[in-house]
Image (cartoon, rainbow, N blue to C red; front, side):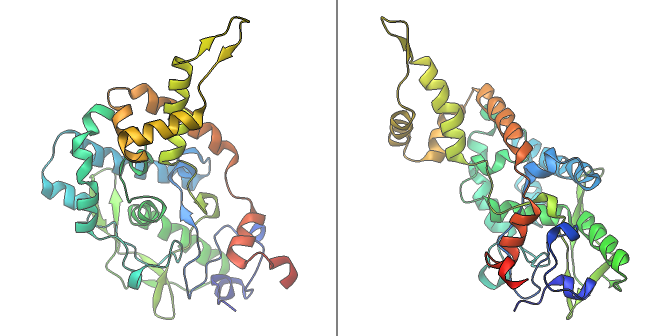
Length: 307
């Protein structure tokens, strides 16, 4: 049986998530969940409101640097602390727990220079749509670093709530300061278990997969607009539209990949991205994971049988 964080806080290995405020991670392995930027954007808790200021500050700085053709030095600096640090124990189990590196992400993000001025990325999650090979895991790792201080504060609140002792930070960790627009070293207290730092994650900001994807954007906005533009009115007054699957396949064949299709078809059409922002916000009004869903993902589908 996995040894979970609740064992240390409340002496209960498998409490239902409706009894706690955090994701009850295993301290031995990663749980297949990710920090979701849209849940932060649309959340109404104090944590989300404050985290949104921090994440918006970071991505505004990142996008502006690329918009203005900033130096490679500044770009590398912005991506310096984006690697997986293993303290949250969520995400995919990675090679030696290292995840993305500064150099790796710098190379992954190089393609932004080719189109960022014509597309004008705005929202935190836009980068997932327009940077190939950077989805749930990469974004969740980056957000963990950006929010390291905020996540530490949440962790310390839980430790205080349950009377768990904390210790000075033992790791070389950094967080984003939106006021100075710089990374700063974390020097506060931490939760230490078995000699390792543990970061608790508020349960309201995680998802098992992102609901905004390249293909979803292609189908729900680009293909939809094309189908409307190509619609005709039949003799009996009915609107006849092309099949969405046919248009989608055509666009992918013409452009080579889903990613290239949305890149090529969105350039100089910022209203497409604006439309998708509205769709995503509307969709996410009902997409926060329930306590029951978290129980099943964290503890397994046979959780009820174990109680």
